[in-house]
Image 1: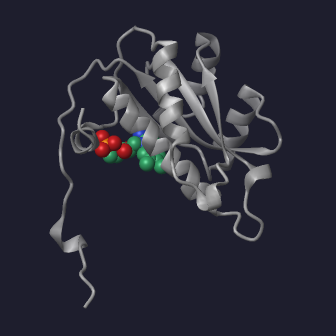
Image 2: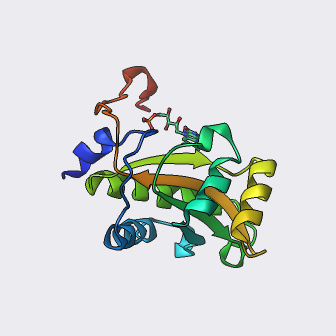
Length: 168
Ligand SMILES: Cc1cc2nc3c(=O)[nH]c(=O)nc-3n(C[C@H](O)[C@H](O)[C@H](O)COP(=O)(O)O)c2cc1C
């Protein structure tokens, strides 16, 4: 798939088929994630793959907005050991870039995906960290659902001319 086509085709999928994502596809998605740019190439991200259905149900129950019938969950977390001293907040941009790469790769592979926000909601962060036994040096950033889509979502542009400002 051409990159621009994938960009417009990527949509938030909230209905999935009962079909597993292959390990090969998971590896491809993670490779895409880790290809993302990061400030001074610190790569402050960690990826937690959750295939266990019982654990998935517990995670999806944390928030009504997370309760989707996806077959795979990946938690992206920031590793404090790789934060830049004095510029700690850059981990947020770095992890965001990694997440977007994952969504686009999923689209490229014919999969649906859904980015669910975790950081900075303290209650969600605490509950999720506890359920997946996240190491103390990691901060949960996002929960991403993946799976085969069971709904038709149209490609679309959201280009709005008035948001574009040419500086003279
Ligand atoms: C930081 C962030 C947090 C989000 N959290 C949720 C969520 O908790 N539940 C959900 O269903 N969608 C969530 N979304 C998906 C957005 O609702 C969705 O991207 C937006 O409505 C645009 O639709 P599209 O992804 O199909 O282009 C989140 C997206 C982002 C970027």
